[in-house]
Each structure stands twice: as structure tokens, then as C-alpha cells.
Length: 352
Length: 68
Image (cartoon, rainbow over all chains, first blue to last red; front, side, top):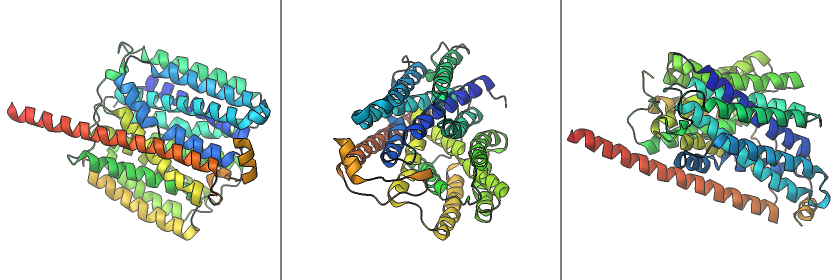
């Protein structure tokens, strides 16, 4: 196993910067204010749900370069949103326009990173998992930087640098700058109907998105503890892919789901045990993505879009119904984790 | 206009993604919901079309290998 570190780290950095920009704008302009609910749900919906369509578009048009288009769209959106802060009565209208550009840019960058890491990885999950893991670090960094207005220029320079680096990286491996034509070699799933795999693995992502809000983290009271929480989420996502390549996706998927249950249930006030549970819980992300890519051969953009759509569908109920009681959350975590492990056993090959 | 509607509707905090206020029916919320529903339906449609396409490819490649 030889991970393509240049591809993985460049896309990690790109994903990190994308989330820093998005969460900086959201938290700087709306945190807890009148528009928070509507902007948060609009951001979730417009960034996550259309990635299937964006993925299909870039797969059908391999000559169009997603990194520069996505990066520039994102930067334009962020500038509109920050300038709109002083738009007076037009504030909400300007912010909605900015948010539209920001989310579409976000979606394009995610799809570009997924296409790049999945197609050049020779069937491994490590590259895409490392790419996905960058997001959690970016979310918490963006949230923390939101308190400083001067950080915006630094963030914009970083985003521009990430866009240029990502584009240059695609030209560095002799794939004639056309990486979207490189075939995916992932082969994790059994010979069962594709619809079953998409429904089960997509369902696991929905469940993960929903119970992710209900994880017991009463210990999380300070900023440094929140930083730990997000870092362990990111580490879990990255480790999920790396460990799958070493020990097999099925083994890692099933074990991480099952071991996460006791870690999460008894650790409401025990930070380190809870963090291990959160990391284990996050490991399934790369495995579901790998399974979906194996099923939807040569459609990694669609496969990645299924996971982001699943995440949106999983988080959407929170906007309308809030969180159930602690006891219901614990029951959900237990039942859904066991069902997820069963789903992995049904869909994934034994020796993979 | 939307600004006024939102102000009339009052603040709806959504702090830390952990607690949402009950859903209040109004024109902005409904418009947002409608757009989200359209986006989700289009995305699901694209997924179904791709599953169908992949199934056809799988069947035809199976037939090809059987014929060989």
C-alpha cells in the first residue's frame, strides 16, 4: 500500500480551506441571529443535496476543470456575503445571493476533490478519506476565526492558494490534466443489486447524519474541548480509510460501528472515551463512500453525491423537530449502529 | 420584503445545531422548503437514472463475457 500523499494532502488542505471560508461567513454573519435558522438550512441543502447533479455534470464534461471554477465561485460568494454585511435593507437578499455562490462553489470543490482522490487512488480508500477528514478541522477553524474580522483577507488568500495548488496537483502526475477519465478500481461490494447497495449504504449515511447530533457529549463545555471533538471527528474519518486499506473495509466498518456503541453510551462525562467513540463513529464515512463507488463503477461523483445527500437528509429533521430525549438518543445510537454493522456485512466483500 | 416577513416572524435560534425551534409556517420557510424539496427530488432522480444505467452496463458486460 503506497498512499499518494501529494494528492491526499493537497485535497485535505483544499477541503480544510473550503470549510474555513464557509463557516467563517456563516458564523460571522448569522450565528444565533434572526437569520440563523434559514441560512443554516439553506446552506446545508444547497451545499450537500446538489452534489449528485454537480458530480454527474463534471463526469459528463471531463474537459471542464472543476477546481478553478469551484474555487472562484466560492471566493465570489464569500466576498458578496461579507460585503453584504453593510447592505442595509438589502442585507438578506444580498446574503442569499452570496450564499448561493458559496454553496455551489463548496459543492464543486467537494466533487472535484472526491473525483481526484477516488480516481487516482488505484482502489484504495486512504486518499479520499484523508480528503474528507480535512472538513472537520476546517469547520472548527472557521467557527473560531469568525470572531476576527481581519481574518477574512487571510482566509481568502488561503482559499486562492488551495485552488491553485489543487489545480497544479492535477497536472503533476502525467494524467494529461484529465483525471476524470481515470477508471476507479474500487472493488469492495458483493455481487448484489446496485439498488440494494445504494439504499443500504446511503441509509447508513442518513442514520449517521441524524444520530451525529445526538451523540452524548455533556463534557463539551469549553472551546478547547470543542476543538478536540472536531479534531477527533476528522481523525476518525481519515483513519477509517487508512485502516480499511490495511485490515479490510468490512472488518473496520463492522468493528468501528460495534465498538463505538459502549464508548459513546457510557462516556457522556468522560471526554477521552467519548472522543474515541466519536472517532470510531466517524470511520464509517470512508467505507460507505468506498462501497458506493464500487457499486456505481466509474461514477465516483454520483457516489460522493449520494453520501452528501444522505448527510443532508439525516440532518434535515434537526431543523424542524430538534433532538429527542437522551434515552431515545441512546436507543437510536445502539439500534442504528447495529443495523449499520449488519448493512456493512450484507454489502461488503469478506476479504476487502 | 423578505426582510420584513422574517422580522415579523421573529427570531428562530438554531444554536450549535442542537436545538431547533418548532417549525413556523410562513412564506419564506415554505419557499425554502420548496426549493430544498426540488433539489432533493432532482438528486434522487439522477441517482435512480444512474443505478438503471449501471445495471444495464452490468447486464450487457455479463452477456458479452458469456458470449466469449
